[in-house]
Length: 131
Image 1 (cartoon, rainbow, N blue to C red):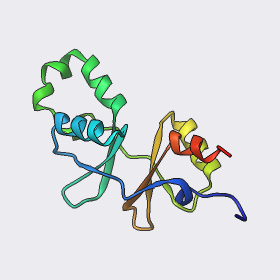
Image 2 (image 1 turned 90 degrees about the vertical axis):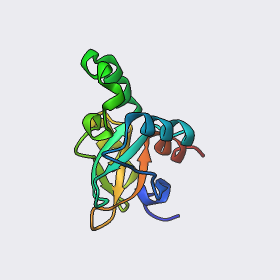
Image 3 (image 1 turned 60 degrees about the horizontal axis):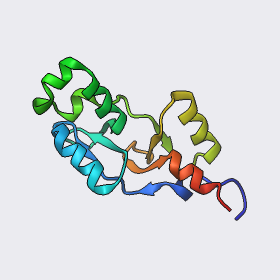
Image 4 (image 1 turned 30 degrees about the vertical axis):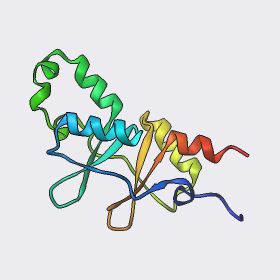
């Protein structure tokens, strides 16, 4: 392969997303059943508005006010927003730099219209460095 590898070379394509109105229990169930640690969050039109991670769920459970309202909480109430994004043409080094700068474990890969087309995670980066 010539040239630097790109985000598009190692990302997980066609990410599973969740609606901002979904319950936290529904989102936690998706994370668990799909063995993933984060989900792009979309509004009713399908536009990317945030990310829900396992860390967001843990933080919410650690907050006494949120715990008491847990059954009625929606994803949109605890998600990280805005979603941190990157183009599929970005280099892996650029992706690693963005993750480090923002102290996150994943970036949503977007197309020219800012629609989510993939996810690149720290795990994807580590796997890309293996021989």
